[in-house]
Amino acid sequence: MNEPFYTSDWHIHSVASYDAHLHVADLVSQAEKQGLTDYGLTDHVNVPSWIHFLRASRELVRQYARPGFHFGVELTTISGYLERYDREHGTKEGYEKPDLPGPEPVAFPLTAEELDECGVEYVIGAAHWVLDAPRTQDVVVADMHRQNLYCACSPLVDVVGHPYCFFGTYEDRNGRQTPFDDFSIIPQSMHEELWAAIRENGKAMEANIDFFCGNHPEAFRRAYADFVRGAFEAGVPITIGTDCHGPQYNDRNDVCREYLGAVGFRAGDFSIPRFRKPRTV
Ligand SMILES: [Zn+2]
Ligand SMILES: [Zn+2]
Image 1 (cartoon, helix red, strand yellow):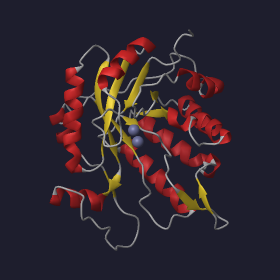
Image 2 (tube, rainbow, N blue to C red; image 1 turned 90 degrees about the vertical axis):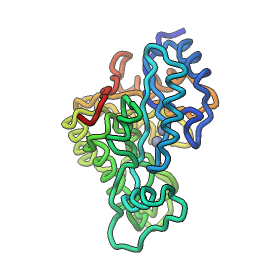
Image 3 (cartoon, helix red, strand yellow; image 1 turned 90 degrees about the horizontal axis):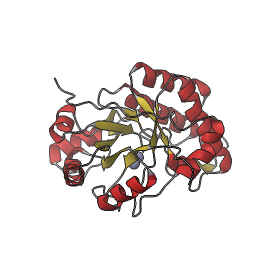
Image 4 (cartoon, rainbow, N blue to C red; image 1 turned 30 degrees about the vertical axis):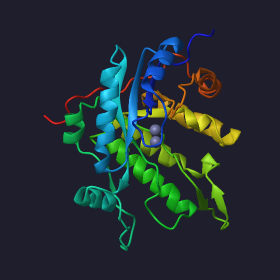
């Protein structure tokens, strides 16, 4: 067996996530076999009323407590209108996007007080949805950048998760609906602004292994690896995140070596998040 290319994984979803199927008993035994020394659960909290998922996640981390196993969370950016509605109603059911001009304000679903109350050691802040309209190329790129910067600058966040995660299609400059399979639509100036914001705010950026798999074309994967390498060379600490949703916890060393190794990363180049407890003092 080759030496592991990475020995820590900071982005893992358990059965305490609404969309994941990984049992923590399987995670901890597989992590040990694979030679992980540090890793953390980061179950999803998408709206304030989902804090019960975080409490369930905390119980799992406590139940399987061992050295190197950490308690994180993945907070998504959401519309500030949705955040306010969910807090007022205790649910997102019945929410309708208000008919107001301009992009929706960006918010996180939890506060520093709530993160402390749950004992969260580190926060992945990550965008998942476009909050501006229409879904044309320029609007989509600008909105992804806006939300990435929000994550990079938020005092809640320790790791900016999967920059430029995108679902669905957008209208390209020729009026065609297209999936996000050409990474070069993001200007280099945006990369540099994002890297500077992450670095200056003392955070890390995630190399999300999902970007090197699935339906992404080869050129996209290579461009994404160059983007991660650019961040590293600009002084941004890089954390590994497999973003596993189960049911098995898989060894991704080969794919990491193939894409991140090809742009110059070596085992030992990857960082661990800041562990901050408490956030409120
Ligand atoms: Zn995510
Ligand atoms: Zn995730």
